Length: 30
Image (tube, rainbow, N blue to C red):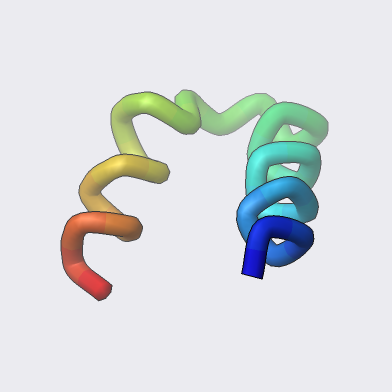
């Protein structure tokens, strides 16, 4: 499962998204 989070962070970092804003709300919604 860790690799999914790793890829997710890489994609969002590369795309220029704010991971801590969008990412945490996504993870907490799971």
